Amino acid sequence: MNIIVCYKFVPDPEDIIAKPDGSISFEQAEWVISEYDLMAIETAVQLVEAHGGKVMALSVGGSQLSNSKGKKDVLSRGPDELYLVIDDALSESDTHLTAQTLAAAIRKMGEFDLVICGEGSADLYFQQVGLQLGELLGLPTINAVSKVEVADGKLIVDRSLEDEVEVLETVLPAVISVTTDINQPRLPTMKEILKAGKKPITEWKLSDLELAGKAEKRIEVLNVRSPKQVDRKRIKITAKPDEAVQTLIGYLSKEGVL
Amino acid sequence: MAVKDLWVFSEKTSLQAELLAGARTLAEATGGGVAAIVVGDETSAKAALAQGADKVFWLGEKADKLVEDFVPTIAGLVQSHKPCALLIGASKRGKAVAGRLGAALDTTVITDVKKFFVEGDVIQASHLIFGGGAVRVEKSATETMIATFGLGIFEPLAADPSRQGEIIQVPFIEPKTRWTLRERKPKPPSTVNLAAAKKVVCPGRGLQKKEDLDMIFELAGLLEAEVGATRPLCEGLDWLPRERYIGVSGAFIKPDLYLGIGVSGQAQHTVGITESRVVVAINKDEEAPLFAQADYGIVGDLYAIVPELIKALKARK
Ligand SMILES: Cc1cc2nc3c(=O)[nH]c(=O)nc-3n(C[C@H](O)[C@H](O)[C@H](O)COP(=O)(O)OP(=O)(O)OC[C@H]3O[C@@H](n4cnc5c(N)ncnc54)[C@H](O)[C@@H]3O)c2cc1C
Ligand SMILES: Nc1ncnc2c1ncn2[C@@H]1O[C@H](COP(=O)(O)O)[C@@H](O)[C@H]1O
Image 1 (cartoon, rainbow over the protein chains, first blue to last red):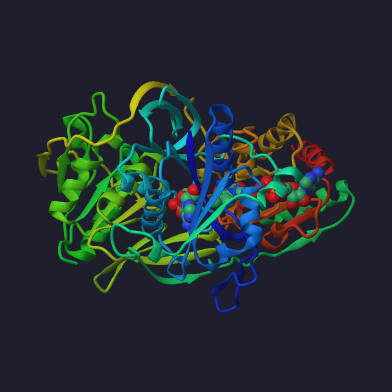
Image 2: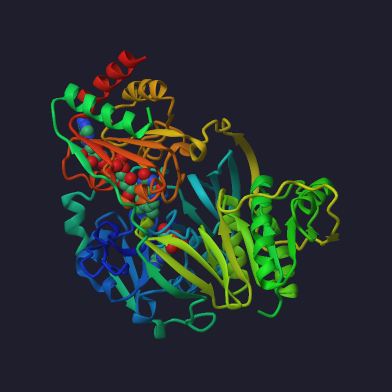
């Protein structure tokens, strides 16, 4: 079976700097595969290991995606081919434009049985792209998938909701978004890292694709600010455990929280 | 804003009540009315009126359908009435409905809204991005803003069974795609209410094994605190149920005391504890970011500190 796995390339949230004027900057940030998309990639790789076929990784975004280390990183995690849509118009895309672009890319990529997305992107975490993509492709789509099985052209999933787990079935092709605990992604081996450099990569611009509508966003961002910081006392106690604990208890009883 | 009405949809009754209360407040600013979209029996349609809706679009009973199967029906309704906003409960199911609706209506969804307000005659929503590292204020570029809200954003109104309103029956539109439900496996109901806890003890990955939670629970017992956690302990390690994790994708807490034990203090987690009155950190790494966001911190090995703390608290009793 042919599986398309969608991953986002994001500035590492840990490298975000809050500036004194309250604005934020990620100019210093390293760009990485969105953490929870590693589980989506692993799901695709495991299914192909079990059923044969190939995994095509797909990402859309701004110029950061051309980063060769990033390309190698995703391919060393098991996908056989990489497809990228790189365009400045996508660098601050909303979920609508992202899903539209992914849908157009997928229509151009050809035959597939299953599209897998992650639970949510590490920067926006809207948990939306997979669902919007499924609807745009006119395919059955569902979120919160914590287990997948494929048999006789059918897809059977466990869907982990707040108060119950649903076991659902549909016919392929379909689009699913998987949870973060569906698997433990493996680390790339030296062999995979070496192989990664030789795998085929296809790069498109937006103008190479036929989007269903205009390449427009549906959300207008009015402002972005760092959340207000709370002033804390920042008293650090460095002492032997018993003394440190006594000091802490002293403080806490003064605060009236014991 | 052409039509000033606000609509609400949630398959969870308590969340529906909160959203209706939120919609009511906003409707005062827009000068519109409030409608609920309800899947269920006639009693639940009436309950939405009591919770604050002026009008109910009643889609009928769920029967053998999934809530998600009502997406084309809801999309049709939105298309013909064009409310200025559709507020959806941010359960997993709610997010699935919202996402598919967003795509079907050629728009998108603002998820996990923290603040919702009208400025001029524009509805704005704020929510967290970069794992809580930033707050972003947005507006919808289309006629109807679709947004999802978790629990605790709005205070529900007291149900008023005497409230009257119109109940409009809406015929079901068959979806193009379907999932067949094979089985439902209930999960044990959650008994924790972190949001209401006065004290919270929160272990992180500094804990080496599940059994070590025993000492955390013992400490929590002595402090009369609830046990929270960082996300990796609840997802991935599965040591504790999901309801216990604190942070951008988990619970937001406002206790008098938060005690983080072996917690590094990354934004995704700490954004959920900013409203704590006193924050305490225990970490062996002097550089752990949580220290900068704590009132008191002990630099040391939790396996030495926690037993000492238990001993000292017992001695005080
Ligand atoms: C989209 C997204 C959403 C997320 N949402 C959340 C969320 O809502 N909530 C959340 O918690 N996380 C969330 N995360 C995960 C988050 O990024 C961090 O990975 C997580 O909070 C770290 O948990 P931790 O502090 O327990 O572990 P670590 O970061 O591994 O920290 C462990 C700490 O324990 C200390 N330690 C180790 N041994 C000892 C010892 N013997 N004694 C004392 N100290 C010790 C270490 O010095 C270290 O500081 C999210 C991530 C993403 C990408
Ligand atoms: N720019 C992108 N390129 C490819 N896949 C994406 C992109 N953005 C989001 N996704 C996929 O959609 C999922 C949900 O993203 P989000 O709706 O932003 O939380 C992610 O986990 C990815 O699998």
